Image (cartoon, rainbow, N blue to C red):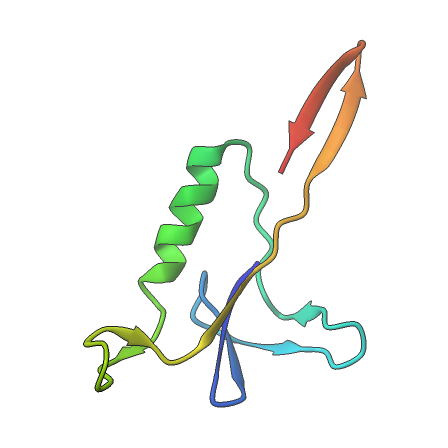
Length: 88
């Protein structure tokens, strides 16, 4: 999940759709969860979301993000036939 919080509004950066941070537990509701199998796939998702982030000029920086960004990564390790497999 990859979201932006701006002016108390939460937006899924992967879809552009509104989502919600649940107060109890801080979980994200309505944000897309994507399964990735490699670092390259993860970087592609980050770049896709980066395009939707909001930027505005400030006195100190001409391209400043005026929002908070949250990237949620859950990793799982599975044992299969004695080999470790990392799934992100």
